[in-house]
Length: 160
Image 1 (cartoon, rainbow, N blue to C red):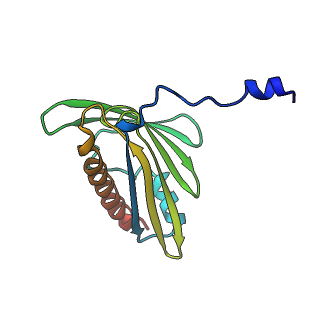
Image 2 (cartoon, one colour):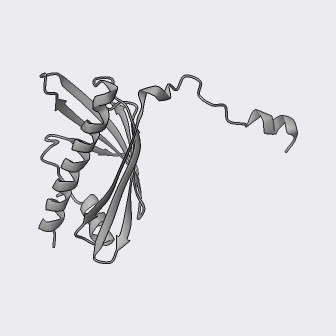
């Protein structure tokens, strides 16, 4: 490769990315009472529902990519249409990209840690919101993660 072609392929930083509007969130220490194999069976099951997200619509576009659409009603009554791209990386975990909605622009990766008959779960991401003040983003994200985690614990307990 010539020097000219090498320079042409150098990545340029996105100068429009305003990092001050993002909040780093690390949520670690969760443990599912299920093996990795059972976790992945849940994720591919139609029984994998979250009562906190009623009416969610899942559109699987490939073996690893699913789009999730769900309407959310905020405390002030505002309806927010969310669109999330979920990319599976079995057995490691999932990437979530909020394309529209409450956390539009946010990116998170949840990964699994095998622990025999249990599975650790850690989530890390950069979060933002066009609807929430920056100081309200992290508490809202942590509440969301806790709710989904508890619902998955219940879903896993119901599985055989």
